[in-house]
Amino acid sequence: MEEELNATPTILRWHEPLPMEPGAPLPSMLCIESRLLCAYYIGIIAKKSARTSAVLLFDRVQQFRFGCHYNHENLTNHPLYKYGLRSYQFGLVDNSPLLSELYEPRGMLPNTLRHWIITFHDHTLEVVGDNGSVVGDMVAPPEEALRIYSKQLLGRRH
Image (cartoon, rainbow, N blue to C red; front, side):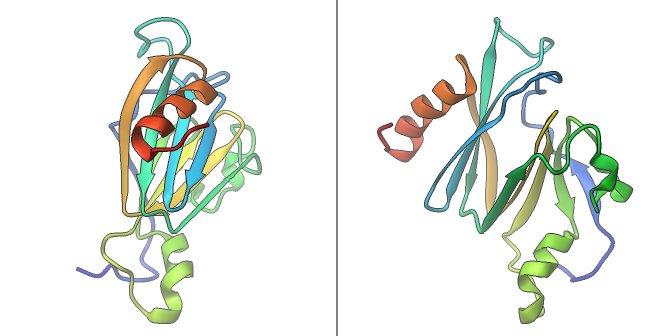
């Protein structure tokens, strides 16, 4: 089923990821071809032990953006804020304007593409791709978790 362009966006909660550490989740990314790994420190409530990182995997990524332009202090300026985007959130954007922007020249969206948005303390990550999943967690800094999971999942040596 093709998604209608230019409908009102809605931010849906993405329930699978472990809650992030609100103060300094220190998100790290690794992109290899069309796969993106994202690791971050998880919050105290979710922790199995001190300084645990969770790792997310996005497949068949068409586009991602990561930066500090929208953070916890100025998230109200993000175009999706008025549709429910909030700080420290793992979200899926239904009726995404970003998907419309990418596919408007064709007039319809591939029904497999989704738009994820994650609002960390100092950064926001937006991903357009076919699949997003939690691949695990480990007691390690995010960069180390990325290195280990990239070997396991992507067959890369770092």
